[in-house]
Length: 194
Image 1 (tube, rainbow, N blue to C red):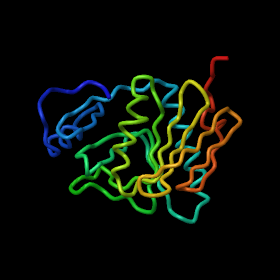
Image 2: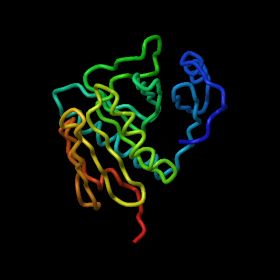
Image 3: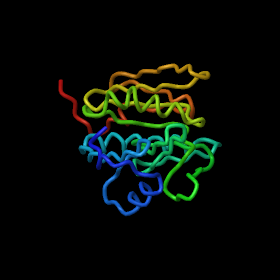
């Protein structure tokens, strides 16, 4: 998480109105507004590669899945929170926060590309937050500095199973959408230190 905009507590209506006019992205945590940092090119390339591969794989499915980018804002009702993941997959139909055309409430799969400044929060805090969303079934964490992807899949209430793919020649199975994606496609164009 980054810096708070101010110590003032905001209402959801104030936050949503501010965010519609803002050039920058902000997340909302129960009255506090947090400015999001910009991402480095390597982060954006990995996210774009994964979004492309998700789109390609999901075109083959009979079920209508929708892939959305990092401009997608998610509402976590139980926590009165609004956040921006790096990518989202929705099954069948987008459900919107009441009165908003910009906030979704029904993510199935959420992707976060890990950055040094947000890794701990993405792995633990944000994952806990996302677990509060009834439709949420899979969390995909993608490392930037090495070819390593972890997919945590909900197998039962409060029970998640990790699937880890490591190495550029491996693949990750995303169970919620029954897709296999090669890490070589996710990391296309990325150079790793030897």
